[in-house]
Image (cartoon, rainbow, N blue to C red; front, top):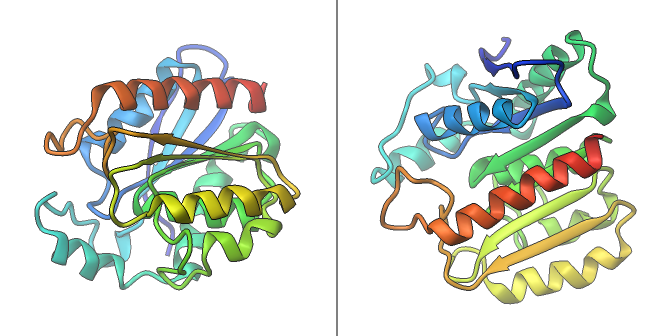
Length: 225
């Protein structure tokens, strides 16, 4: 079953391609906006609907049990297949693996990291993806897999995120010294989980979001050029 794709194209020749992986709430307006912002920055962006096997639901941000229920139905094989569908689309647009990147948020941040372990792409960026010290969603932990990273990886996290402890990030940073690919971890002192999503005013943090986006575009520009 092929994942439906939402694509946004830049005005001119793409500088590269970016796969955008959703949060646990589905392909929301926030995810579509990320694709549009990437297109404005010169990239061909594509977001696979990871919940297509469940009818592509959009889950309310305050309905965490429903989000967990839908997310729990996915397997690593399902998620790899959906990422590969998106990558195949980008490659059909004459982009190579090294000209492609993957960015993910929350659930998608976990998928992004594990894709960086599985595939040698140009770049990967995780926004507050869980599973750093303990595996989740059928994946091993970030720390246990860091030596297997094949793609340069940037991790963006908030210090106020109770689900991703600071100590775990510091252990990952140290373990990253053994990684074959470059890794970079950025922590935001005043940011919580979901800090980049303006549709979640309780956790959205403008200053951290702006800096994280600036770093993301710079990372793509430096690794996909």
